[in-house]
Length: 125
Image (cartoon, rainbow, N blue to C red; front, top):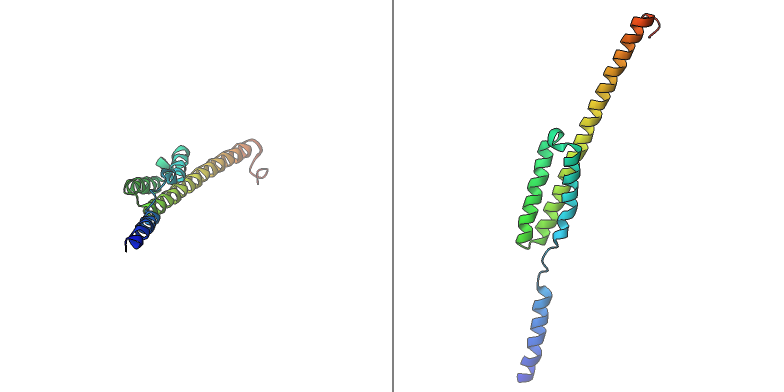
């Protein structure tokens, strides 16, 4: 019986050690942080504030779950934060592109008006 106990104890310890949860890697948040920084730098505070706020909230939640050692929740929330930040960046870029296009259209309209004034309407068609 003593021999069985001496073999059972190390086997049990190995089993318990194998089931131990490895704490989540803080680097799991890096992509989300980078995406948020890119969105902020592009002007998402002005053009996509809601999406940017959601990204920040999810990143904060991921940090909280990191402290609780819930790696699955950290990964999910960090991924969601990154996606929200990417959406904020895309909406910001779209808004900036629309603004640029509108400015170019105004410039073209002004050029047409200037040419019409100089050469007459029949020349500028």
